Structures are given as structure tokens and as C-alpha cells.
Image 1 (cartoon, rainbow over the protein chains, first blue to last red):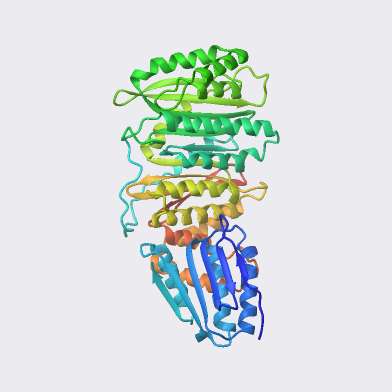
Image 2: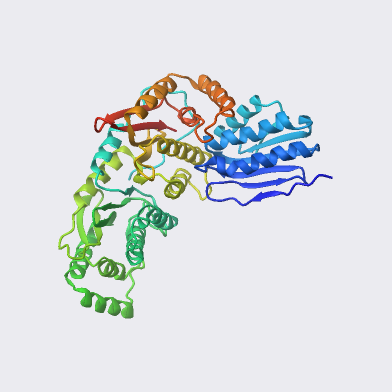
Length: 127
Length: 385
């Protein structure tokens, strides 16, 4: 059985809470993401996802519950999801849940945009 | 009484006829040229913003000032002046605790002075007594002020709004200067009470500058343009986050941030982060200015900074292109840019920011460049939300 330590980050004023757990088959990002240097924040998440896709082939939920994010964070979120799409052993085992408040047009549109760019099971859940 | 929040409703398709406030932003740049930091807020006044004001000061000015004792004194003066508006300002309903919706609070640094100007509205019948109190405090030297302070503390004759004149005495004691004040007529049997507290690092200086007239005209302009706040200073993340918090809570009516509040926050952060990326490289920290307010049922954000000739050419070309695209074109362009960004070497310059700003704006972007010298321009951008 492969092992990969969980990646857990608490939310800060400008970065979201992160829970990436191979054991639970869960990649969750929660909050708002506005760091000036998004690369520094997202690089470990990208590397973790890459390793996860290489080592694991199991049902996996990706839960994205974001208040909003800056454009550079958006670029790295897209990179994480692209890694899942292109580097996972079986992309159909992944499901993306994009949670968004029902009156939040901006985030609904962002979810729809990502959905249209990816060949992955992608559900937009209005809360 | 003015209204801060117009009716918002869903985004309209209206794309023409947006008025531009960029000239006001350019004026502000001109007027604040010798002020590294200038902040002005035109209410509503809520207790929770006391902390925000301190955060703005700490992240902008206290870092430049290396004497902790000065920082402590200025922090005290800021809190006292802001809460003074909360305690003594008139409200619409007249009976809500810790809330005042009319007035102005501003601070600026200029040379060796740190200046706090405030305006609150008081019933006209109270100005005589208030004027006497101010006059008395200003006539006393440090020892007499201390004595009066202790005397007041012991007798503790608190007014209905919780003050015993102690705040004013403390302002005079901690600033070590006369507290400047003036009254001006306001509608409905009320008066504007202007107050200026100045902290000067040069103790030898006998006179400090008086900003009361300037503050009144600022208040009039902000009222007529329905401006919530303006800020000039550094655009580092540390300085911008407390401003973001203040804006989001003002746009949202309750304690929770509404989707409009989040949308505004999103645009504000995107604009400020983008502007700082295109700033002149001479400054160690990115600097700029912005104003935010309401116009015709929308939120209007104007932001600007000083850029080089090269940056001007780049931005002008890019913004002229974006301005002419409709919502669908912008969405397709964003998708293409997002795909392409994965191949970029420079990880933090994906080119997505301005497209994002154009998409989030409910009207075409408005921008202007004002030449400052042969190499530098003030870049001013307006976004409607």
C-alpha cells in the first residue's frame, strides 16, 4: 500500500484552508484565496496532487468551496485539476464538487468555466 | 440624510453612459503628492472598524516610524478620534448604540506631522457647551491638563453617551498640541463638528498645519459623489487586507459578507494586485491610490498608480482591446489565457488579471493616463460592479 502524508493547512487572511488526504481520498480547499504570490502557496498542493495521481487509483472527491479567489490562484487551481485530468490513472474515479452560494453569480460562472475546460466529472452544487 | 447603499439588484446589461470619476482620482493624486499615506472614510461608523483603522495604520505608517512610543501615542489618538464619532455622532434612528452614519474620519502623514481630522454631526444646541469645553482644554498646559484629567476621573460625571470630556483631555495630553476645532452649519438644526488632532515628531515646531477647510471640502465632494472611502499608500497585501475587510463589510448590510460584498472584494483585490504589478520599479513597496463608492445603483472603484512610459504603452494597448470585447468574448479570452498560462515560465504573470477585472466589471473599463514627467504617467482605472 502506497503512503502519502496528508497536506493540511489552516486558513489565513488571504489563503484558504486545505485538506488533502490520500487516506480519505479527499482534496478539499475551503475559503478565499488571494495571496500575492500564489505560486508559493499552490506549489506544494500541485506537487502533492502529482504524487497522489501517480500512486493512487481510488475514488477521490475534490471539494472546492471557495468564497472567491484572485486570478493567479485561479491559474493554479486549474493546474491542479489539469494534473488530475491528464496524470491520473483513471480520471473517472475523481469527482469534483464546486460548492457555491446560489446568488453568487461570479463563482457560479467560474465553476462553469472550469467545468467546460476539463474532461472530469464536475458538479456545481448551489448552497 | 444621504443613503450609502443604493438598490443593487442583478447586474444589468447597461454598458454605456457610465459617468467617470477618474478626474477626482487624478485630483486626489495631485492633492496628496506630499503625503505618503492618506486615508479618508465617510462612514457608516461601526465599532468593529476601530480595529480596522488601527490595522491600516500599523501596516502603513507604523512600519516607517521606528519609535514605539510614537506608534503607541498615534494608535491611541486614532482610536480615541474614531470612537468619538461613534459616541457623539448623530444617527438616523437616533437610538442605535455604537453606530453613527454621518461623519468623516481621515488621517494623513505629511512631513513631520501625523494629522487626524474628523467630522461628526451634533445638535446645534450643543455646540456652545462643546465649544467652551474645547476652549478650556486648549487653554491648559500639560500640568493643568493632568490635574483636570484626574479631577474628571474622580468625579466621573459621565454624559448620556458615555463621555466625561476625558477623551478630549487625553487627546490634548497625548498629542501635546492644541486640538483644532470648528463648527459649520448642517441641515436640520444640526452642526458639523470638525476636530483635528496633530502629532508632530518635531517638538520644537510651534505651529502645525490646519486641514479643517480641506476636510470640509473633501466631505462635500465625497458626499456629492457618494464615496465611501479613499486611500493613498502602499498596496502591499498587509496594507490592503484591512481595507478589503472594511469595504466588504460596508457593501454587505449584515455581519455576514454578502455575495455583492465578495464580488466587490474580488474586484478590489484583483485591481490592486494588478496595479501594483504594473507599478514603477523604483519603489520598494507598491504604492497607489483608490477610491470606492456608489453611483447610479452600482459600486464604482477607481484606482491608480504611477507607471513608466513602457508600462503605459503596454496597458493602453491591452485595455483598449479588452474594452471593446463583450461578456462572451471576454469569457472565451479568459479560457484561452487560462489554458495558455500553464505553459508560462513566469509563474506569477499569467496575464489573467486584467481580463478578470474586465469580466467582473458591469460596464466597459474606463481608463486614463496623465503625464507627470517625460518618463512617468499616472495610470487611472475605473471599474463598475
